[in-house]
Image (tube, rainbow, N blue to C red):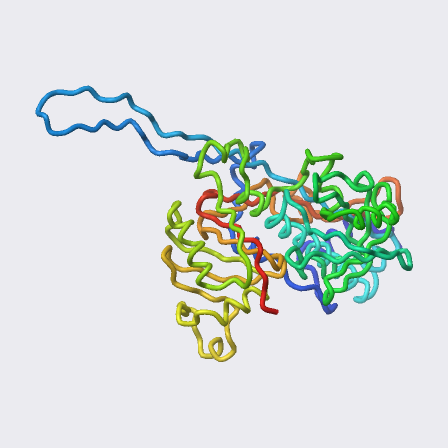
Length: 435
């Protein structure tokens, strides 16, 4: 029998990836489905550039009707700048041994199904990381308050703050690699060495960590000392680098980072131009539609004049669903079946137009994002794919490993979410849900 090659596997999987295993992972990809990907500007260039009008003309002259010629004040033109948005790479590498590859290419359906499941899981895992980046890229993944902890069975349990908890981020994330830094000053804990997510207790919002599997493994005793000395921030391994306040981010800047920015972002200063600064709103207690309408008034006064999307945690959605039902309406997609079973989306009429309430398990319990529906795009050189970015027309997925008995495969994308009008968006924090 001839040896199995990468070409054999590419032929096997080029058309479709079969599904035969029950997938327990919760769905993701909502932001990617909702907002358009705009690739053309980056195909032949390094970054996406969007000219932005930041101020109005200001060279006015006032005069009473004196019937005499009078001098005009000098012109003061509008201020325009180009927002320069870089794409951010995300790569997931994996391997398959020759023995597995041979069985998949020449043997039973069982091995073909196993390989297909691996491909499906790789795509899901990459999509999840991408979606977390759309929301929280360039910011901490979670926070944990000072607490007393005990190392047991080579694991250290840490309770994540309720406001910073998103079940979708942690559920199914066993084996994910993370690093820690102090909340006061973002000083690296254990030199940003890696820790492994070993267990997840969703009910108690507790994550169990062990020594890492990438780079230099972190030390649990060092992490224990850090969490018992003060609050910590959590980041994905590789997403940040540095040792102190000036962390460098290797990932895209998500909606939170863009809306809460007060400095220079994408080549434009929010300190200099009000319209480049989003609405960063701290609230308390349960989120109600009354509060939402109040926050929308700020966005409306700063330019929001069209439909908006409100992304929230599913528990926040449940609170909003039972609040101010009289403001709710159904659109053209209404059906008797949908009405009798409730709705996946809530839509309200507000001063800007419609507001769609969208639950997402990747949004933290204390957070909410309100963004103009037509002012959010995804830019980049390539959507998420298994194909070789250097030769996408060939369509190959697998390649032979030069120093190992196996084949490799990768997912790759170059993208970044981009909020074109920050002043029309709001990030709301401090929500305390009823359940």
